[in-house]
Length: 115
Image (tube, rainbow, N blue to C red):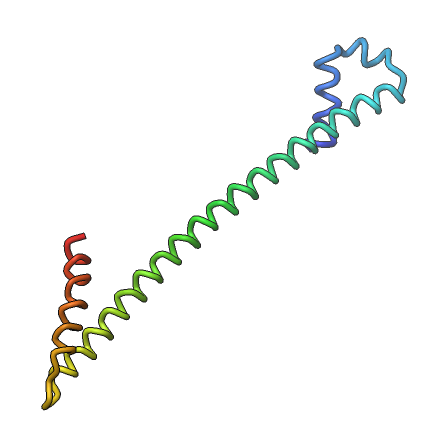
């Protein structure tokens, strides 16, 4: 309807019904086709713009998901390192290295709690 009826109506409103009636069929068809072309260009521009907006939103969501995955991985690595250090302390022959590694792991963990 937008492409079929509206261009003829706009032409009669813009130019005037008397002048449209005085136009040759070729001139009238050419004018209506020009209006249709402008409508189609506007629709294409709106489609491209909406596609760009949707792509940007998808990119933002993907970046947020990646940041969340990295945070979870860091926390998992910290937990693994802490568990290994505690296991080393639980051995019959504890070493100073395991105590130092426990301390180095606890420092970033305390920073995470305060943040």
